[in-house]
Amino acid sequence: MSPRLHDLTGQRFGRLLVLRPHPERVRYGKDKRAVAVLWCCVCVCGEERLVFGSNLRQGFSRSCGCLIRDTTTERNTRHGHARRGNVTRAYTCWVSMLQRCRNPNTKGYCNYGERGITVCEYYCDFMNWYADMGDPPDGLSQDRINNDGNYEPGNLRWTTASLQARNQRPRKRKARRANVADIRAYAAALAPTATPRRIIKQSAERWKISTATPRSSSTALPRSAGFHFAGPSSSRRRTRSAPAPRTCAAPTDCMRVRC
Ligand SMILES: [Zn+2]
Image (cartoon, rainbow, N blue to C red):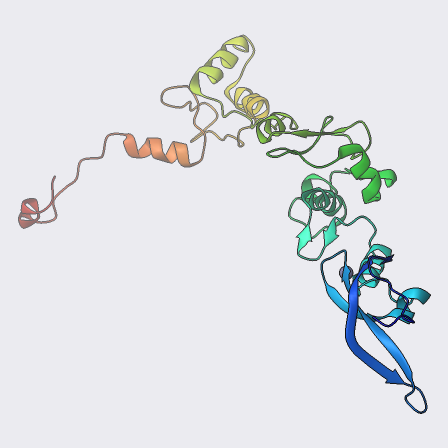
């Protein structure tokens, strides 16, 4: 090593650590009399580079190139949960929440946005939501404690699918179709003043069955229960009644047709 050479071995410049001087010299200038020394450096990321000593001393070279990449990424990143190809589960939950409440084209919109369920303004910022909810535990999903409440602080939790299934709106019960016993009991209660037409009308209103019509006249009551309702069930009952005797058109038909 030339005595005029300022030894940089072992010194650190930014992310670069100088290992040794490189034997190659680079001449520059008008008559190529100036000589630049190259130094072998290793970056904190493990890459090795040849760097001019002047660039190290003046601060122009501080890494192998990874520093500018990391700085740019950090500058353009808000929270880091939505990196391309590496979207976190928390971010997916948050986006799904917004979609359910705001996007009519989403599958479950009818049970959320159309019902009036909204996301409060505070939770429209992912970082606010993430600060309260954190990462979703394995096997759990987001649930509203009050099923009719909005997505807002104090109304959210992580729960299992089975618990979510129990935390639902009460289902609408279908009106039960009146059976014979119901109609008999109701008719018995109205017996002193009831007429067949009145009983049928009030039964239809009470059990929400289709409007009933007597088969023949207002005085004609059904075979078993005292009523006859038009519809598939009544026609099915008719088919069960005893068939009318059939007459043979010709004596030979008796061989093929049961009569
Ligand atoms: Zn590097």
